[in-house]
Amino acid sequence: MQRHLLIISTTVGLFAGAASTSALADTSPLEQQLKDLASFQVIAHRGASGHAPESTMAAYELAHEWNVDYLELDAQITADGEVVVFHDDAIDRTSDGEGAINDYTLEELKALDTGTWFNEENPDSADTAFEGAQMLTLEEVFERFGHDARYYIETKSPQLNPGLEEALVETLEEYDMVKEGRVLVQSFGQDSLLKVHELNADVPLIQLVWYYPSEEDNSRLVEWTGVTPGPEEITDEDFQAIADYAVGIGTNFIYEGEEVIDADFIRQANENGLPVHVYTVNETEEMERLMEIGVNGMFTNYPDRLLELVE
Image 1 (tube, helix red, strand yellow):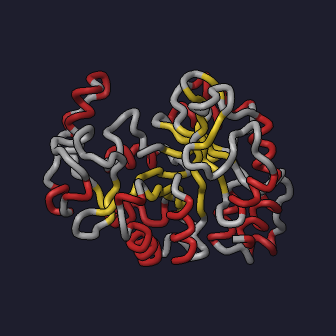
Image 2: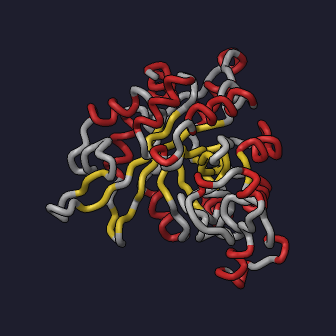
């Protein structure tokens, strides 16, 4: 992925320099997508999930209508090998079913109601149209929005979804999402990202990280999977190790009310060719704070709030 690092470091890095008309004519859709990371990215977390049931067509339709930069979604695999769009490992919270998602076939999952729960928990945003919403397949999302949208897809719980990477890459290739510059694949699992890279080295990858205080020393931050040291200890070499296979980092901003990254972290990541996208930011005040310290994009359940600030 050194090619990706070169593209990002030269076009994103300090984010300077516009291409000439002739150069633009020679830019592939995938290269253009990577160049576009120089701009601030509005990422609709599970769709416009503050306004409609997460990961449903209603949530993605609304976010797409608002012209967000990316529709964010979680990919998991069913008992019969189909890729579905769903966040939790268990179906209990956002459907009328119960148990592990991977224990069910697509037909069984399609019989679930994944919308009514939202009305019950969000009476001010309730809509009878949400009732009976079906779980989506990745193919259904691609069929609906095609190349008119970009997708920010997480390989969810790779240890619980054997075969997910292969099925995901196959679907991305079937719909020409990679060469057309339509997709980023994210994961907390470095092994999962490297597997995707082995299957198709052109897929742009985002390494997710989660920083929190160490149990042994709560004055020291650590990263959930150990993919990097804590922000106070991270080095250029640590960022370069990620830049070898990924084109960006997705990180939390706050842990239990305390900020875990700052402007220096973002600057250092950028200088090593890695845009920083922060999750999941829903309050306008926090959005403004993050924009002030230079983040390159945000995941949000309320893309309308973020779009107002960006515009």
